[in-house]
Length: 223
Image (cartoon, rainbow, N blue to C red):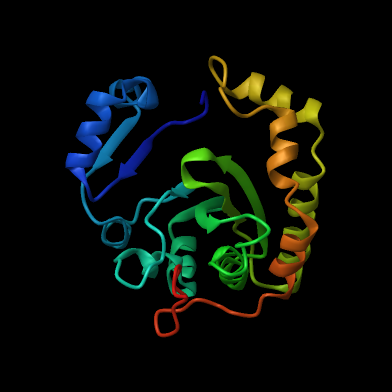
């Protein structure tokens, strides 16, 4: 990405990263050798809390919020509000959000994560992509920082509308201007597809009333 000045990856599992770097070099495609790339092998939440660096984008591809796991605190309203203190103006948070198919988006945690993000951010866009190894469409949410005021809400709605209504041609042009090389997955038509989640899931996101907090977590696979 031509405009990226610095990219920080924080991962708690150095052994796993080293194995992937050795055995799956095509996945990182030379990212480790890029001078803009910096890696920290530690707890991501603790690292963010210990550093006051701000970012334009925070991407969280983290463990699912399961009861026996350590990652559920990264899906809470408290953490999302904290993330805002580590974002620049108009900053973006993207998080994986569990299964995103019509038969499990509400039953698992996709709609809860969407609603929890919406408690902290005025503009939250749900989307889903096919991940064959996961067995179903997988959900993601993108949140954009705005002030939690009436004016901020209006701005958030405008930003959401602008993103959702971008044309195939607009997306293709932005990719051509900003990205070196060819992307394997994303183009304008693919973008229109992943944000075009089924109506039933969109309605479930709108009617979801649960908000995940430290004291009231919602776990995946909880039966």
